[in-house]
Image (cartoon, rainbow, N blue to C red; front, side, top):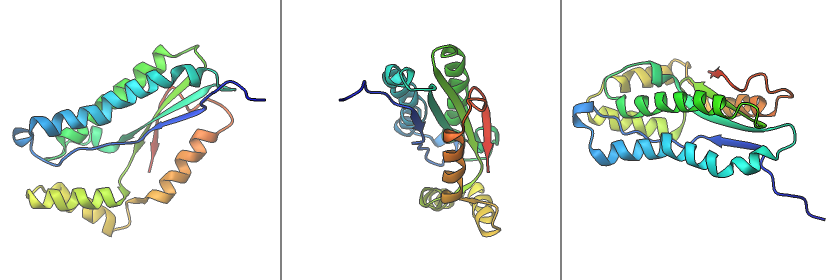
Length: 173
């Protein structure tokens, strides 16, 4: 016997953003960051909403943000601005979905040591952007979280018994 299809958890984690000064950002990079960091989470969530609403105990959407959304640094505009937009989108989704058996949270991550971050540092250094040194120092001084540890914390958040955390911003460092 097969039941109706449901979806309990949706994590919008994909992100892009080329390091550059805003005066040097090309239209392609800007549009790509908006498409991946803002547009895709909205429309993927929208398409999966009927399945999320059927989940026992309520479906959960977790949008993965970044501390850089609130930390203005030279060269981080494309990524930071689109992550700030994702934060606002998350708040709006939580409000609009209130009472519909779907709960939304925005996880504001600190610096996470990933291969993508290391590629970003290299690209930023190639453009003489000072935030590359700040990010590298964060890694070197052990202030960057491991991807594994952040993954565990996010899994705990997604699997918690209640929906108390959802509908708000959560900082994960």
